[in-house]
Image (cartoon, rainbow, N blue to C red):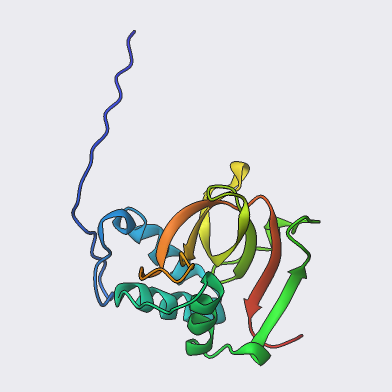
Length: 169
């Protein structure tokens, strides 16, 4: 039997009740997953996710690197430098974190295999393919580009730092 595969493309945005604005094009396919991650997150993680999502919806540009944009999101959510807990810290070369530690809203630093194996960071949203270490992340392009934050799939196999909102415990 011959199998047929169909690909359906759409430019419409998915709007979920209670959200201030629907996502744009590529982000729309992740809207339900983002909403689910927010609902299931810890209260601190939820605050970070909601704050960062609003920044994406407003298409905010924060000049600087991915770190600058994410630091702004964490600060606005109420988690400045003194209110962040480092769960794991290493170097780009490893050793690497146990990915079972991750929760929605965690700020992770990882090797970006899709862009020259450079250092990159983002907010962990949810697993897209846990076995292959593919995660939905909220990240910022950095390099002083004039582009807003975005939701994208990343291979986070080589995660070398995990920061969680909240004080030291």
